[in-house]
Length: 410
Ligand SMILES: C[S@@+](CC[C@H](N)C(=O)[O-])C[C@H]1O[C@@H](n2cnc3c(N)ncnc32)[C@H](O)[C@@H]1O
Image 1 (cartoon, rainbow, N blue to C red):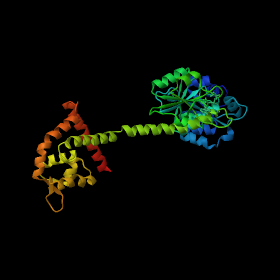
Image 2 (image 1 turned 45 degrees about the horizontal axis):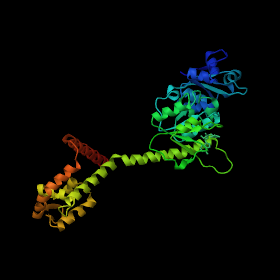
Image 3 (image 1 turned 30 degrees about the horizontal axis):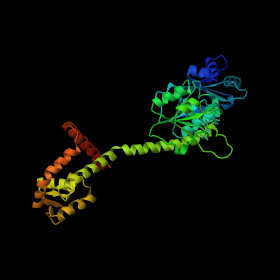
Image 4 (image 1 turned 60 degrees about the vertical axis):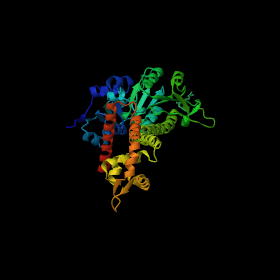
């Protein structure tokens, strides 16, 4: 049953604790924060931040947020407007105030995503909140701070971020140097921003690696040692008499451009290194290598020579079997068979042209080709041990089986 009731004493321990939470030091010590106003409370519910309890003014006893809280089993207490003002430490009334727990996963995260924003001594709470909100809009939920004092749970940051701080992880370092060294060690490419940089952001050479975007203090910009140690320093080109952009605005532009380019770079890298492409290229190169060796002594391609070898063994094959044994696709089949028919190496045994048999000349040409095909195979697998060759065949067979299953299932 949800606990609701009235608190009348300013000395009540829940009130005393909430009063403390206006100070950053208490938030850090208690791992809790103050939610000021109904919007903050709703953002916290949406972010599944564990809310311990809420204090409300008599003027708001029918506020829909209270029934939302009751549905979630969160206790709410009626308190006087005087106590509410004492808790928020304001001369004006904030009619709903909540206390929520801050999980360690947000303040001491063990992992970070592929794109992080590094705040180098950014001071203004509105700017910090805007940056968190914009980053969140681009799917970025990791903030790195070059100072140990950054506290995202300050009321102005909560409201400027529209509650996105409740889902943002923050890693704090003692200095810029320490932050950059740690990021580089974890494989991030560090991109610093400055209105005075030589490289234009849109042209910056990105690698297919996670990105740490550094933005700087409103007056001083990014510290010199960070600029020196960054992998790239970029500027957003400006025209006119403007010295620099507001850091929140600059971060928005950089995030949009760099996140898009990072995803594209990673995608291209993935396409270049994916299994299908590697196997496809290997298959084509093997055929070329066979062709090159076999053409030295005959007018056949490697694939045709392999087909003749199988056909001479089996004596009769259907078109289906030919495709299966040579790897030819349906639209490639006629181009494979027709030259062999014209050169008199094979013939159809039925009117429907589905069964294929070898002729005597195919046996003659095979006598010359046998050893060459075998040598070509040995050359293609040069350097492989017998065990590796067996493994390779096994792996390829498994890939083929997986692919066949995927095609059949769809
Ligand atoms: C107001 S600016 C600081 C200007 C300061 N005079 C300086 O030396 O950089 C705050 C931050 O916004 C970013 N910034 C502002 N304008 C920029 C631009 N045109 N190109 C790249 N970054 C910019 C940088 O991260 C900068 O450190």
